[in-house]
Image (tube, rainbow, N blue to C red; front, side):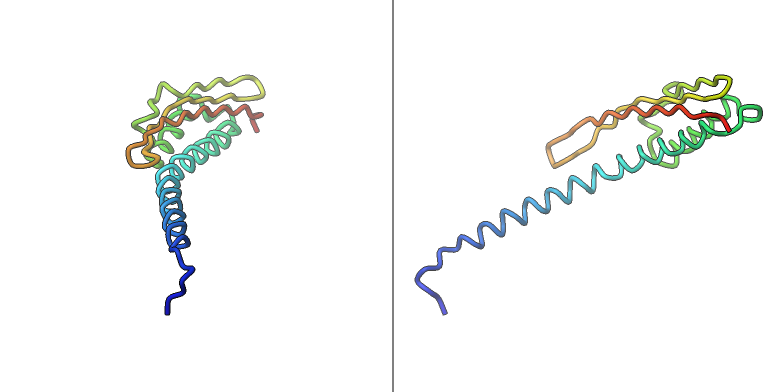
Length: 123
């Protein structure tokens, strides 16, 4: 049963919204894990900045952070030398800066820049 007022406009807008939704899902699928890995690394840096100074020298902290980098598959973007660990009398500062290229959409690449810095009192 067809009405004379039907023009098919609703179908076109539905297709457009479906394409937009699929594009958004594709972008989240590729960008989300990179942000999740970055936030997990920042959390681990926060945790390592608080460990006791007497049995955790700076090299051991960098070793632990590099293990986290390998687990998060960021080792091709973060070399060991990117970590800066400075231990003071009552606090520890850890920083890292790196870039990750990501395919946001097919044919559209973006380089995401991350800079994590933590400064925590030593427990």
